[in-house]
Amino acid sequence: MGLNLLYSNDTPGSYPDSWYAATAPALDPFAALETDTRADVCIVGAGFTGLSAALHLAEAGLDVVLLEANRVGFGASGRNGGQLGSGQRLPQDALEKLTGRTEADKLWQLAEEAKAITKGLIARHGIDCDLRPGVAWSGSSKGDVQHLHDYGRHLQDRYGYRSLELLDREAFHALCPSPDYRGGIVDWDAAHLHPLKYALGLARAAAGAGVRLFERTEVQAIEEGAQVRLKTAGGTVTADHVILACNGYLGGLEKRVASRVMPINNFIIATEPLGADTAKVLTKDIAVADSRFVVNYFRLSPDGRLLFGGGESYGYRFPASITDKVRKPMLEIYPHLRDVRIDYAWGGTLAITMKRMPYLTRLRPNVLSASGYSGHGVGTATHAGYLIAEAIRGEAAGFDTMAQVPNTPFPGGPGFRTPLLVLAMTWFGLRDRLGI
Image (cartoon, rainbow, N blue to C red; front, side):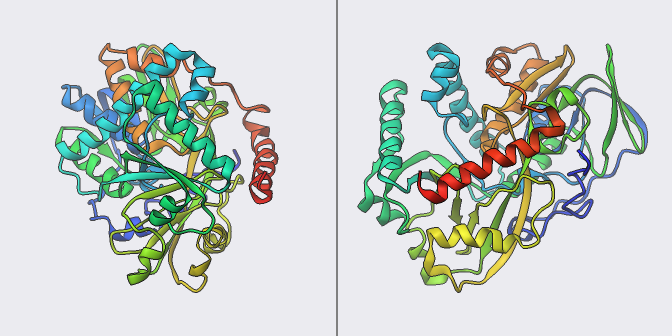
């Protein structure tokens, strides 16, 4: 990789200077691992996947060690747009073509379960993370709107999904008064939340359930066998089962996963509080994602800021000015915000796959991995942690359904995948700008 994404864009052991970090209640640091220890299960990575797996396994009575190279929720889990979407990352009609209708039905039910598990964890553990209902998908052309409406009807007719509202231009503008959008759909069973508060809440619940969490503990090597041994700078963990939950920060730890899961960066800005002008952005407390290939996504914070995400990059370094990078797409959607002050700007590393579906795999009988959520991770990653926990306990049907989704390696392997992706994404970005 050349650069270690755990450290290349961030101060080790610190959260980014984000609106999320500024508003989440602090969680005292967990100590680094400084001894040799043993566990039933060792999990690498304390994002949504690892925290969910740890919590579910500990509640089932297993002895769990969770190792995090930086801080709990440090990666994409604590930085993302906070949208808890319905369905899988690929639309159901695309999944029907990819996997067949029977498997697509199963994947829809698993996605519904993902939302329910996420909401259930928040309720059961009293996690105060600003959970609110409603995510809209907007179209910037008549063709985009028609496609969204056709898809909404497909979900209603084929899957019996009744939480969607199809909106024409006038109805959409009443909700989201952007001159760029010509209509769309609203999903009232989808939701949005404060992702870092959610991650820290999962960590508190996991620690309360007996999980041994260690921060500032990077795994340097994994020795596979009947029992797996994980080496860190301060000690080792020997475990019956291992879960790799590193997503975009996997690095060179597991090359079989790295060939199918590639890190990319995405960026968010938070404006100053807009006061009475919030109604010129959104008239209801919902989240929005648009139909561009490089998606813009946004919502209002509880204190009236616009949290706006957009502008991906495919090198490993963040741009010199994240504010400038994200302000440009923001002004395409809301030109009247030209003079609004930007108070926070941050980036994060997520991971994508060729098919845009997560990559769940059993690398060895006792080594499981889940990653590659492709921007759909709040519910899917939480759910993946649950599915891996169930698989370790012998109930692998859900995990196997997700693992059977075709997932091809990136062309060029880890060495050449990035320049190839830059070429492809530059083309798709050009298509967005030309309105193709």
